[in-house]
Amino acid sequence: MLSRYYSLSQPVTSDDHSQGPDNAPVTLVEYADYQCPYCGQAHPIVKQIQAHFGDSLRFVFRNFPLAQMHVHALKAAEAAEIAREYGKFWAMHDLLYEHQDRLDRTSLLGYARQLGIDESEFARKLDADEKADRIKEEFMGGVNSGVNGTPSFFINGVKYENSWDYESLKEAIALSSGSR
Image 1 (cartoon, rainbow, N blue to C red):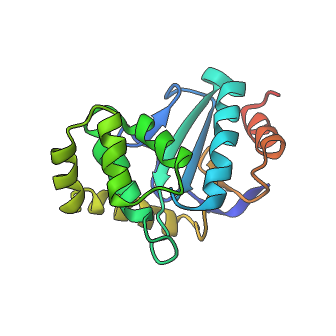
Image 2: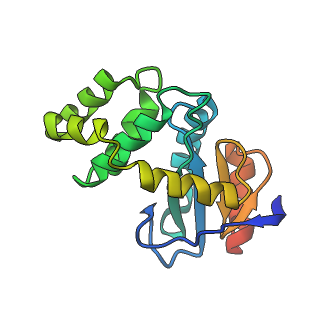
């Protein structure tokens, strides 16, 4: 079910992390936290959804670290944002979800090294909180859009309020695109 009350307060732009064509009939936006176990469960479901819909879907990821509950969530989000500078956002994004139980600073530096990112430069940026403003902006955009937990999904700008299991999410996207 799509919400009658909530829509994206920040429209999708070229500055967003996205996969799929900009002109896809459906845009799926996810607000998520790298340490959230539910987001970890949703990660492979989103991958399946992307594979099912192919070029008919644009997927957008936005950071929504629940830092009071998840002590490593903010630094993990910063690590993904730093990796973006090296063209490695999606690779880092996947590593973070695949290794949710290891998001401490040492592990983040190891992931950077694994992706071929200069570890000392990465560490300097991580320690300087260089990406904190961008993450806060995405977080506040989520708050202003009615996000109150993770993962939260929006389909074509409207908050999706049902179960995010594969079949339910697939059906909602198909209905939004006018196809199944």
